[in-house]
Length: 303
Image (tube, rainbow, N blue to C red; front, side, top):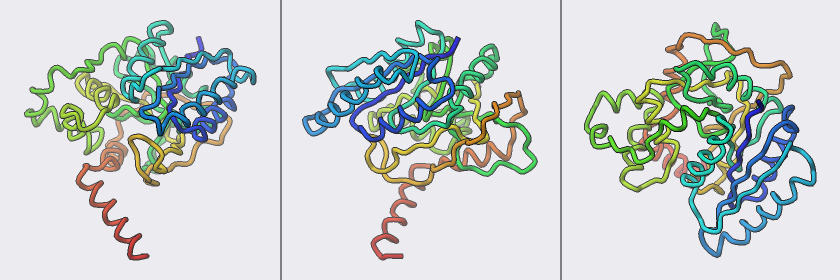
């Protein structure tokens, strides 16, 4: 069974259009059921763009790009985290697996093929938590032969999972009091990036609203892995200052796959070199702020 695709949209009509049209160009688009969840405007300032997004997504069905299109429009502003948790839960309960995108992700033509093949290949592998379509622009060793690698961190930029993994998440993080003072648990979570334990702290203090850090925390507790492609199938176009949770950033720019051949899935050993490069790419919040200050100063001084 071809996995259903979910796209979460809000108030970026141009990004939404590019995301959906690149998805429509996928080899398996016409065989895929598409579910679009449109969040309601946060304020009057956002209302006009939300309506533009809704006008566009309502026109999609007539193009017959997908097997079917179902649109759910929220009357209120749920926020991205609540939208994703409720939307994924609704669809995955019916289909048992899902492929998920947000409104600022350009996909390669083989993205859906890659995701569906991976979902089939790893479904019964109890070490695999999720599938990522995106890959960081990290160095992959020249002698690394597999077309995929494993990481300790899930990805929110074009991903897929199964019902029996999704249902394991405790969205309230009821054991946080134990985690926050346990150095070993914090170190374990940070295997997927130096920012992760700090991000969970911010989530629990109400400073950020992230579904993904809670998703990744459960993954860490269960000691499970995410599958990443060596060549990315996703490019994020939303780090241009238009996103709710992102500023202007080119650090995560990547080149997406252009080849037509199918990805060959394997079960490679964890590669310590890749894990190190991956972990170090996600820096601590303090370092991230310092780098942004440094770049801002350079811009002001014209250097």
